[in-house]
Length: 518
Image (cartoon, rainbow, N blue to C red):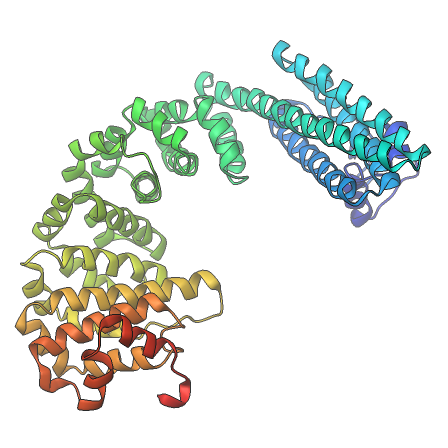
């Protein structure tokens, strides 16, 4: 092969391996083009599909995922073209998909011994792909509409079988590779080898919940917590816990965590003063993940309650000592989630002087530097505000002024997630103010710092609240609470439109306002 010195050409030839014409695939038999370590720098030669050494598992996984994407894309095209009756394209796509599947099976089998149960899927899949190619070819040589209609139904059924078989085969292959990584974690004493395997697992978790489920089912959470229980692997705690947090986005991950008493391990790391901040931050991330309100299963929370006092105490300390915004965000997010599912957590936080710690943190841009962090703080305050002692502490810490500032939170960009975070900050600040204003002293303080004009502005100006209905409802509720205690604080016109009508009528009036009314 002619020697090439251009890096971009090398990249193109690498990508070409996965997106080629059928003739090329048949000739090359999916042999990738890569750089031989023994050759001169920049020379390109044909090599085997998988490199050796520590990179085998990672390369196998990358190959599987890339191939799977290519095949899935081709099968998706087939479904679309079949519906439109484009028989020539249906057949060419079937040939391409068949070739891609065969090359994937050939390359994977050459790189790794295939488990017997996977071999059955491979054989069945290859037969169905060949059947699909043959049946689509028959459709090219006839114009009989009745025949083509019956063939369309048959092809659709075979294509569905191929898609299902392919998904099952890929899941089994991925599970096989994941088992290799987990075995490295469990059997190796080398920190570098274990760290590399954990990195590969963490990378896999970013490919979606389906892979996270496979990883969890293969026992990754169990293996990672074994690492976190050994002092000799302290340097790997943060890395392992970050991977656990990613896996626990699915119920299988949380179930595995519960079975190995993972919550006790998290509590030990959080309360251990000798643990580095990074490890405690990642432990907080796991707590935030498993206490997320989005999870339907709550069985694991029973064991969490046993360690809640220690965990809540450690988390608020972490908020106080956080060296950066990311650490504060993880710790405060965990606390915010905890305050949702147990009122005892709120009582513990009040005893730990949490209001002072959180409001002081809001003054420190090194810790609270984004709407996401402010969202966590105001969530905790909103949940604490249902407790009677909260009002006096908020007043003492000048928290009403902070709530007014949070009512003015605006995004610095048009990023949808940042806009949504700002809306949540405004909404929860209004909710907190409404709850605290049951106390006459809080209501009076809010009126003195001109909270009423700001609430009215948010009600009447859609752009001030980013057109958010939830912010509008919260602000109307806060206004009505203040008006109940101090009727003279609101002018007659505002009272007529925002206070006197039913809440739903005021909502409809404000939600239909144009900017000219402001």
